[in-house]
Amino acid sequence: MSFDVTALPGATFGGLLTAPINAADLIFSAEANPTILPLLLNEFNGFLLIKGMGMLEEKPELFLRLSQIFGTEVESYKETRMAQQNVHPEIPEILMVSNIPPADRKPPAQPNPPRNPDGSLPIQFPHRRGWHTDQSYRRPPPDISLFFCVVPAPKGQAQTLYANGIAAYESLTSEMKTRINSLIGIHAKPGVGRGEVAVRAGEAPIQLGPGDQPQQQPVVRVHPETGAKSLYLCEAGQMDWVDGPFAGIEPGPDGEGADLLYKLMTHFTKPEFVYVHDWDKGDLVIYDNRTLIHAATWFDATKHQRLMWRTTVSGNPGPEYAGETKSWIVP
Ligand SMILES: [Fe+2]
Image 1 (cartoon, rainbow, N blue to C red):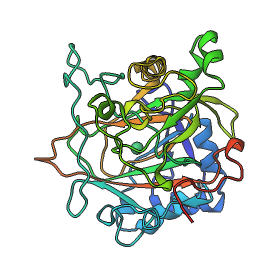
Image 2: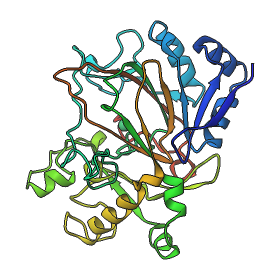
Image 3: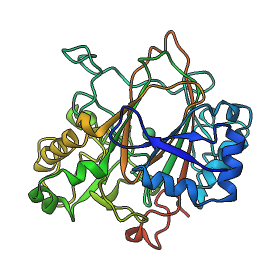
Image 4: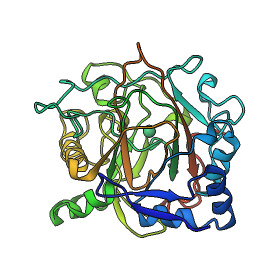
């Protein structure tokens, strides 16, 4: 069976997979020729949308099998101390991002103001907050995430925004590229008192165990399969504003590093690099965390329920991580 992918409508990057349209056919075909989907993901800038995958809700094991095609390791959230109410009861590799009890994930806050002056959805940092690449506070960081919509919020809410780090890097001035090519970012787990808001509020950072320490990552990552260079950064909540956000540059919220992060993140999230995905039930998105960042938008959790499943695939972070043990697993 052949795979058909077209350019993603409404986006400057990404692909829309239009065949096979049946989830079981898709997964069996992909398993029969396991290099095809990863190659298509690279060809379409690290982003694939597949619609009509609703069958996976009844067959979560197929979602896991599809995930396994993209790398050697699919994270088991039972082993990584995820709160169990947010882990699928049968398949521990599936994280449930949901406000439906027992899951307890709340939506992000609305931007302030919630709309642009022309009424459109705020996209660009710093108006839009929450831009990140999954688990960059770990070394080695993960490669790819798969995100599946089981219960969507109403259209116009709970979108996911994706920004293309390859295009954002390529369009930097040569002076900026030279400045950041060897630069190291310091990433921290959200909620530990090291993000911009907490540091500005004067909160004391939480004492972190050896498995939760902030981690250094290259600001410019080289994709291990395509060789493409990409910006690899998060915004204020997932960088370390105590010792960073950059190694070797004046730290803290008013330092030279903060100023540079604001410049880079404002550039990274320009609308021309961003795709806004409004979810339908059964949508599956596959995204490469090595080259894309994303952000969630608000939904009215007092009125609506939402359930997304996510898997996280690792195993090919690139040669700069060769031989490293997992920073988050303490022997
Ligand atoms: Fe995420």
